[in-house]
Image (cartoon, rainbow, N blue to C red; front, side, top):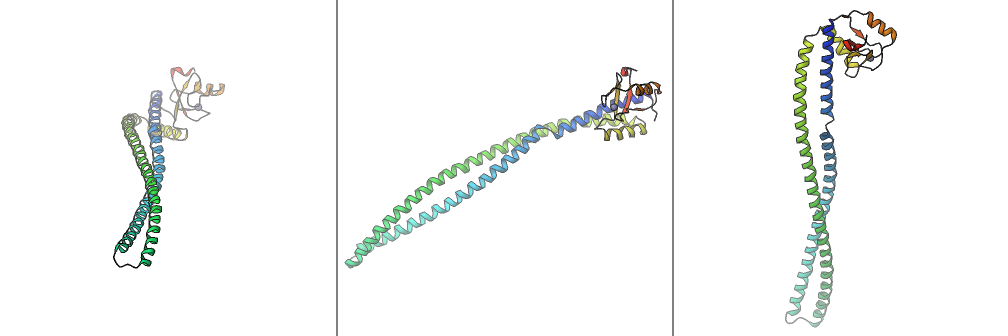
Length: 246
Ligand SMILES: [Zn+2]
């Protein structure tokens, strides 16, 4: 392939733009905010799951408390009824003795239930504190995530503006290059980690950093300025400049 030496030099400008575009794309993919957001999502999932557990046990405790309160109520009403019966006139002595016995046992039962109720209420208070703490932990994680999203979007905006400017420059530059040279450059670039054209500097290919062998150098020296050269080692387009050391 042949191309005007000045056109070949333009390939290095095109390469510089493509390298910048690749760096911008890499920066976009590896923004630290993305890791922060992923970390927040993981933390939020963990806190949410613990919150569900805490809310479930809180609901259980509330149910337990209602049940105990109803039991205490039932026992108290029964005792009141017994007391009223005992206070009524004309109740046989035998029945009074029975009622007395029941009232005593009801009082004991009420005491046990009230102790249990107290314990449940204390546990419920602790559980409410846990739920409260997990809710505020979750809010904190979501706030961190939201801040990271804002920072990410600002970085995206900056990167995208820079990239579209470079894209426009690239389009203009590529538009001025011969189609066959551009196609070769794009093909080589695709299979060579984004670098299609490299400068020959001080007898070294800047693409693979290898110094050209004696026979390669002879071939390069013998080539015409308009010959499009390829590095024997990495196959990239080798662009000669006054710094090539030929
Ligand atoms: Zn090379």
